[in-house]
Image (cartoon, rainbow, N blue to C red; front, side, top):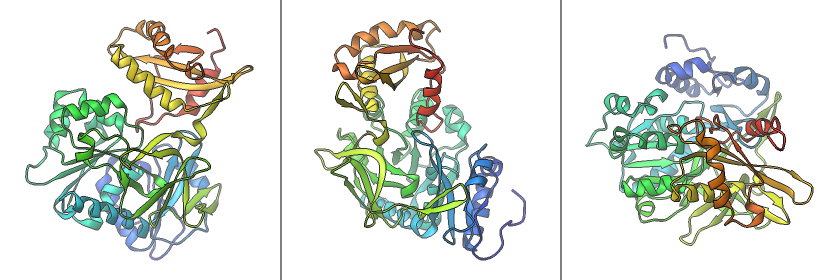
Length: 422
């Protein structure tokens, strides 16, 4: 990326780095970002196609830099734009550095692999961790994550330098579909997995392969990870997202069940429609949109989204938990089920009932999508009545976002276009 630094010296109003530059040349974009943040700028990082929405959201009056503005959400609610101060980002990096030291790894001797774009908090943080803690950074083009053989050839992992990798479950599953991807992952010392729930079958597969997974929890608002399960405890069979990292405190709100976080790494606030709103805090605690509980081993276990629970026949139902149970049952039964998404629709008697969208594995014939429904209905009969979908629809195009999150609003629109009986 050969261009002059486009940002003036000193604190400035948010200015966007072009999405095309972020995607085409992440190393060059990061160099410009580094220079701009050194000058105290506030830099907004849009995803492709989001430039106009970001420009409309940015507030002229916001906390001064150095800071970045990145997107958050988009699965349950609308897209949000949060501002993260560099001091908070560095606090998050320091906390993870202490966690690594506790695992016997010196961050300054590690290879930080970055397979996500800079506009995603988990793509921004590997760069910032290397910038803050030392070590070597290696950018991985997104296309390589879809071609394990090419990935292994383009990025052989050194035997004398611990490789650290952050993935979302979708990326992990794609790599494990090929022997070359499996072999490449064996060269990593730590594989953090977050951004979406880790499916049980995927966790079990990684344990069989003895891959050093570290399921973690965080968000854009927390500067990525605030908990992490050590690979040793994961391989021993422990579930959940682990304990708090050194820089963060977590608790469960007794009234709502929401996961709450207190940390210096929290976002400064949110840009929306030209206005800036500080992050809502209660004595320093921020309430996430996630429901959680503490597991028997003391780690965080996620139950689903606060705004995703429904009331069906007087029972509180968490669709994401039911999805996981049905997916596990389908795999145990040998069904070629690729994706299952449960949505709610009004019911005059029950209040709300679940509707299931179903997609077969890629390799299955087109007719298999519908053919999956009868055996799934039979499996669902073992669930409590409130958790049994009242409708099942074949949806060959069903898929999460590239980062593994379900865009439930999109699929609700799809469902509304198919009346009862379709």
